[in-house]
Length: 200
Image (cartoon, rainbow, N blue to C red; front, side, top):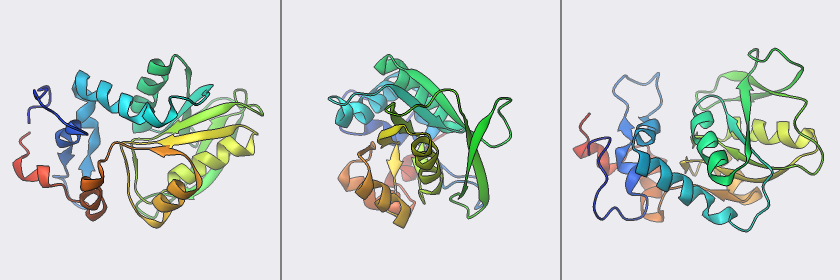
């Protein structure tokens, strides 16, 4: 499907077919979800789907994880009419921060950080990232939010894989993602049937 095309009868999660397969080898993620952001209807529908479980929840702030979570998180924040806070890779903020260590999907040990002058006890935060594979980055973001007394209302991502970490997040926090049940096994096996007809 052309990146800017909107199908007449899209169906649930239609925009997932816009995601691009990896063409650069194993040192890269297995797919590129960000292609769907190029399509205004796809981005709008994705954000609406992510917010459905939180329609009756009080949310004060949206936090997005470096880097692709910034795009989706900002779109979510604007839709809600709320502010957006960036959870950064460590070493990028020029103000006082708190850091949290974690291992990402590739197994590398890393640090993320967040500024100290926004969170406060009772603040209700929705955390957004593009994709949750092993769950390590999201768990670290949750810890950063909770260590400063704020409350994690929920977690949202284009997809949450059924890895050990992904399952832990689903069991312990309210969550949303855009993957219909019939596509979850494809997500977990890291190959989408839509790749067969993908054209760049």
